[in-house]
Length: 349
Image (cartoon, rainbow, N blue to C red; front, side):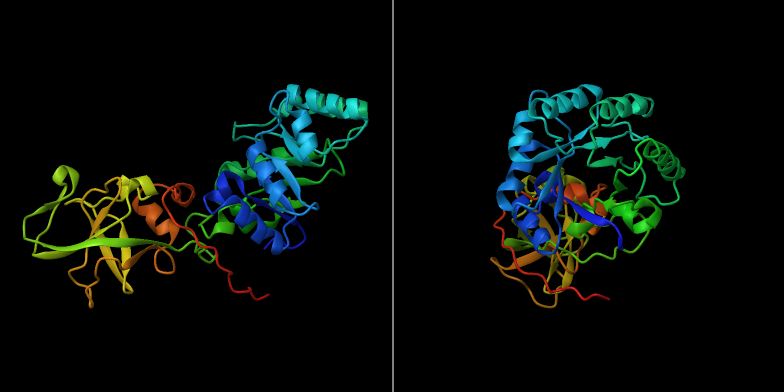
């Protein structure tokens, strides 16, 4: 999709819950040499895991007084304020070396970034030292909504910044932006959620294959009678004699309470034996109840159910929980036993 531009991988937040070291190694093997993390400790972990030709950007910028750490670990801050730039340029002077860093400009998301009216000041500061930044970057606020007017506004503002820094590589595209227009690509794209199988663009088919399969064990199978309720708050009663399976997963494991079922609202689903089984009642800390009455083959305790995988995507669960796939993935931590397996080699088509 981004042919002609370098691809840098966003592996912040433990690679969106996938596992920072394992995901970074897999992405390196696939050809990635540029990695984006949020904090220095994440950068240090990537540096320790990958070969020397890896380039690591710190999206949260330069922490005050931390320039020696960044230099020692060969981390590149995404500088986003005048004090950050001053500290980094001072480090360059003290070492008589042009230490690589990106300049991050805020084009309308109002998070990190130089204000646009600071661009002339930034330009003057770097020119005075003859410093050439590694990259000029910004970030879209609404790229997941391709028709949103703010995308065009931000792109125009970013182009006006780039005009003040000729011949410096640029980067603006996250997963959604790289999928929705080549004009967003510049010299480097920075996908995140798409690398991990999640949906990046609202209202479009997700072209990415699932990365995570999540299974949880059945703890008990039991029968309940018409009119009986399930779970805390007695939010759901069954309208027929039913058989349920109690499954060992709950909100402590990233299966959110918003995925609960009630008498007025369907909850999340799991898959047992290639059939869907709906969640009944409120999600507990450690378990859920699912309806297995209509399954062709009755499961037994110890059988595993699919919570995420080929039949239920991370976005399917997120939609039920009124959230986004990012939050589902980054909440999968703690009690899970993890196995990493080789994925099939993709075709070039």
